[in-house]
Image 1: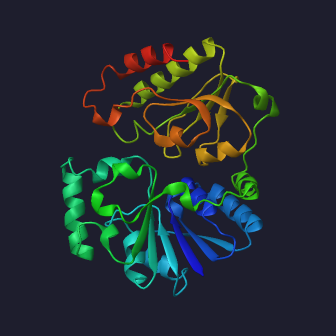
Image 2: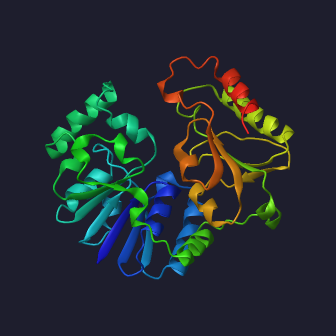
Length: 320
């Protein structure tokens, strides 16, 4: 069996590795414009060292570039999001129509994007383009799209029900796989934190990069969170989002994690987290932590962010 995974993020690579049955002939296609070049070539070496059945290749968005690197046929193709107007996913879908396709959710933004109650220009455009390109309002309705892997099945439209599957249902649970994934992303954490029951993991989000708030406001929000939790005696792990450009500067007692790896890999390190904290990121839902705290869960339903700094500061002071 030949399988192809199309990846645009380190999280996508993680999913591909967790879906590896170690028997299939598997290709991971990484769209290199989305990655740190040095990092992705290091990952390629480690993937192919640890998984003999996997070939990781990189490509630009160019059809010509992609066409020259893919094989003529794949039994199964996994797309890590299913926006029909996104290239090269649509190019791959149209080129390999005889293959079976599987769609994998990519973050909480999918939920807002497919809610029937939400009517906006983006969704209108999506439906028009879907009809134009594939003749249906949603790519998932095509017969060769076999399954859709998501985190919360109940948040998706009823017309998808027969194809929805829990995203972890296809995971390879072999602990050896997890050890190999740790090596692929080259994660090392000081042993002293393995026995600490006051570890806190903070996730950032690209809130200024996506135009929601100014960068200086975002930096003050995260600085407040770190300082308040330090005063409470917690050891802080700080995980930046891969798409962020912000340079955060903290004292040396804050563990600054590499931004270029999927947070889920931290579950394999043996480090116990008292809490995972974010503004509204769904990343905390995938972390093995005693407490999972969203300081501003209403973020994407908010129009005015002028009091966000004060609200998050007050909330972090009153948790844990």
